[in-house]
Image (tube, rainbow, N blue to C red; front, side):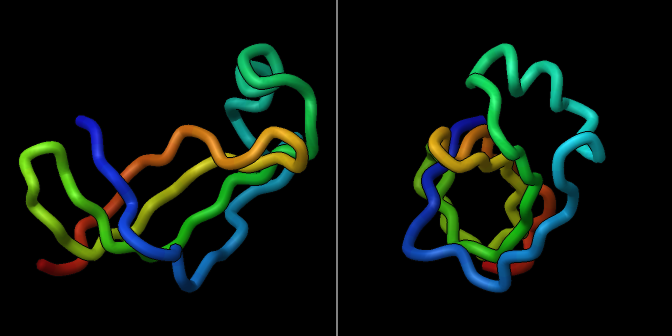
Length: 78
């Protein structure tokens, strides 16, 4: 399911860094080596059908690579 993040992500927290990330090998293969971090935060999102809501999102990030693979983990409110 595709979605778009509207505005900024707030309350950003680091979940895991480096070898603590289960997907580290795949991230390095697909996007290149970097100091990978898994993060979470709150954002307003819009689904493909136009529905908008506040959600907790998770993603991976590395310097020089950027933010990759956003996932909606929890819907917080309409």
